[in-house]
Length: 333
Image (tube, rainbow, N blue to C red; front, side, top):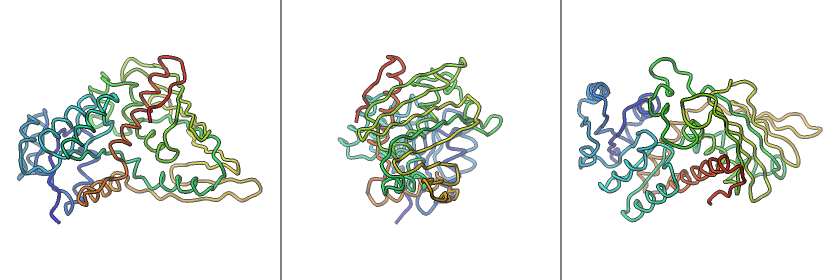
């Protein structure tokens, strides 16, 4: 089978640091043939790296290229859905960065258009393909700690450990955030995607938010309380500003507790020795791209469908509404 011919719209940090290095190792599955970016500097660098590819400033020119099978949309969040919609209307399939949309109406319209046109949308969400979440979900489904009662997680993190101009938080559109919730809607949606894979979508949410600086959106810390139809309750505190100290992730069941650590799971039950399950480090982007490209070439759906992606957006929009209303809000299913 011939490699899928890819057009890339947006050559910023996420392309340079995450996607391009992985795709360079998958040339049997995918071949970039066209690129678009507003930056003359990035266009020049890309033209030098890919001398046989089309490199343009106007994305409509890329969309008109008949050699492009599928378009990778790597634009600022506010442009994700509009750019993906333009690609669909140009007769292209779409692989796009998260979040899939800024509102449910925008996401619904995008997915409906894809169905109407017979085109495909796939969303890049590496947490949806991580082995750690898959293993944890299987353990819980198998009754490893009995019936689930409560999960609690504090995720305060240095959102980006790179230095200098390659830090994500140097990006102007992140500082002047034209999307809800600030960094929770940007990087924090990865955590929501991972939690949804393990526990499913909550039925209702309550939340509080704190703004501690003048940049990067509405909130620098958000505390969320999720309630599930099964009776399970979840508590999450997210911040990319507070110190990354004493983070934890515990899952409580009727028969024990699972402690989730970066490289292992600890299962504790009364009167038993702690069971340790190692989780070797795996490149989540590589696993994600392998799944997406395999599904694309097979004509099948990957695990993280656009409907799942919009479901994660629905959770975050319910969180935003809960903060503003000071009330419990139902999550659209």
